[in-house]
View (cartoon, rainbow, N blue to C red):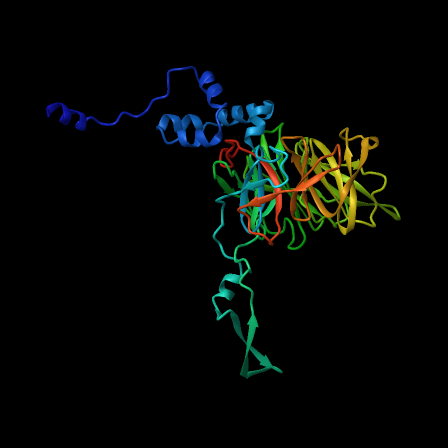
Amino acid sequence: MNKERRIQQQSPVEAEIPLLPLEIMVEILSRLPVKSLCQFRCVSKQWLSLISDPLLAKSHLKKTVSNDCFYSQRKRVIISSHNLYSLEYESIGRNGSFDENLVALELDYPMKDKPNGLAELLDSVRDGFLYCERSEEGNDEFPVMVKLNLPFCVNQRNWVDILGSCNGLVCIAPDEDTLFLFNPSTRESKRIPDPPSGFVPNGWSVYGFGYDFVNDDYKVVKVGCGTVCVYSLRTDSWRIVCSFPYVDNVSESGVLLNGTIHWMVSFEDGVDCRCVVAAFSLEEEVFSDMPAPDIVDTSFEFVVGVLNGCLCVLHSRNQMHNDFWVMTEYGVGNSWTKLTLSLSYICMKPLCLAQNREALLDVDGKLLLYNLEDDSYRYLVVDGIPAGDGFEADTYLETLVSPNGFCRT
C-alpha cells in the first residue's frame, strides 16, 4: 500500500534529449518525416526548441532536395477547388492500372471558413428559391417580389489562388489581394501585409514567389499597372524595384526556376511586337529577356511552365492545340524543342514526373498521366474533391521551413 502511494506521488519526468552532439541530432532528425517531427515537438520543451530551430529546418530541406528517396517521399501535389487538398506524390502512377483512384486529404489553411458573398445571399433561400425585391420603372414605393431558381450546388467558400510554391512554402490568396505564405505540412502561415497605398494602383496585377539563395530570403513579386514591387519575408516589407518593361497583358502567376521568376510577355520593338520570356532575378531584382520559340507570336496566348527542371512554353485559352515547347538547355534559344501530344488542350500546366516517369499534367481542369515515350495517357480519378468545380494544382515539399522563422534585419 505504501509503495503504491509513493508511485502516485511521483511527478512525471519530462523526456530529455539524448546526450548527443547537436550535429548528430540534427543529422538524425533531418531523416524523419515532417509529421513525426511535428508530433515530437509535444514531447518536451527541449524537443520543441530543437525541432523549431531554423538550423534543423535547413538541414531537413537540404536532405530532401539532395536525396532522391527523401524527395519522392516528401513531395506532394496541392489542389485548389474552393478548398485546398493534398495528394501524395508516391501514390501517383504507382501501378499501371487505368482505374487507379487517388485519395486527397483536405487541408486546414488561413481564412478557410470565411464565406464568400453568396453566404448572406443564400440565407434568404426558401423552398429552393431566392426571393428579392425589384422596382419597376424606378418605382420604389411598390416593389415587386421576384422568385429566382438558385441551384444548391453553388459553393459558399472562396476560391483559393495558388500563386507559387518553394521549399515547402506555398503562396496562396484565399481572398482577393489577400496573400499568405503557408506551410501545408506544419500548418504554419503568415499574412503578407498589403503594399503601401500608391505602390501598385488598384486593377490588374499578377504575382510570383520564390527563394533568393544569395540573400537567404523568400520574396513575393507583384506586377501591376506598369510597376514591379517586391515583398521580402526577411524584412517583412514591400519595395518598389522597377517599372515593368513589357506590355501589361500578363494574366498568369510567374513560374519559378533557377532562382528566377518567368512570364511570357509581349515586347514592343519599334513598330513590331514580339514575344519573349521575361526572367526576373530574385537576387538582383532585375528583368532580362530570354528567347521564345520561333513559332510563338502575339496572335495567340502563351504561358510558361516547368517540367522536370526544364522551362516550357504552352498555349493558353485560344482554341485547341496539341503541342508545347521545352527548353532543354536553360537560357539557350536554340534548345527549344517542340513536343506533339496525342491529345488536344485549351489550357495545360505541367506539374511533375510521376513515379513511373510519366508526366503529371493539369489539362483543362483534369489530372492525367502522359507517357512521353509512347504518347499514351490516362486520366486520374481523385477521391475527396467535389466533382464539377474544376481545380488548379501545383506541387510542394514537406519541410519544416517556417514562414515566421525570419527576423527583421
